[in-house]
Image (cartoon, rainbow, N blue to C red; front, side, top):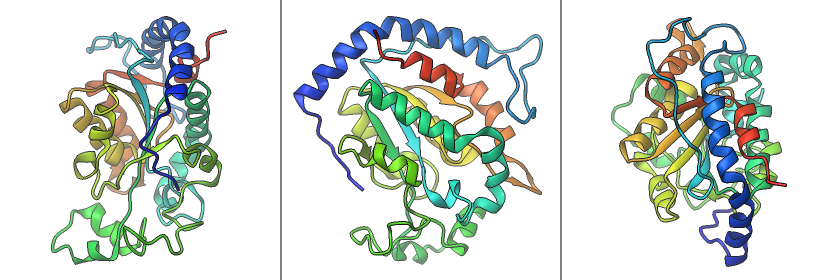
Length: 276
């Protein structure tokens, strides 16, 4: 696991050259893609735009000079069949193809040297001293989700539920991806994501990861409140299905209401395609 907060001049120059030719096309592509993405059904047919939407279509123009990919919780406890949350999120993850779609996003971003950030979720022994918790916090602590030995201790991390999915490691551990400090509940208010983005003059975010109605939606809301323009990738996330309701469906409706754009992985990969 690496947390590299520096970019070489050569890396910046390379990214500018690639982006210079692609930015205009990407901007047009994301507007067209948003209109299409917001008109269709999700993979399992649980949500589709009405024939006559009450909300206007997106007019977000992706500018690769000031954009980044942000992936939340690409960790085994959510996305692997052995993960402690798989029993409630696994069905939705498989329906949507979340694991493969996240890898496609990583690969597309790295192909053009797009800044890539990971906002992870870790719990340390000291977090078990909390005197009150919300319902899902209670569950996560009970099943020891994302547990680590301590903030400076990676003993047992490799291969654990807190670890990255194996197929994402080449992208996350390439020395360029910025792994920010962990968020402790759902949103980035408790970590340094907005600082790391702002210090790089990044104000557009392509947002993906787990889980849709909790950490993704919380990151979306805080980033918007902090002045960022945010496109959510609706098939590169997933959520729990429990007796109380379908978390993915609730997130999709809110994404459509509050995000600057709601896209598919195909839309983003097309927009990030390197210029020839």
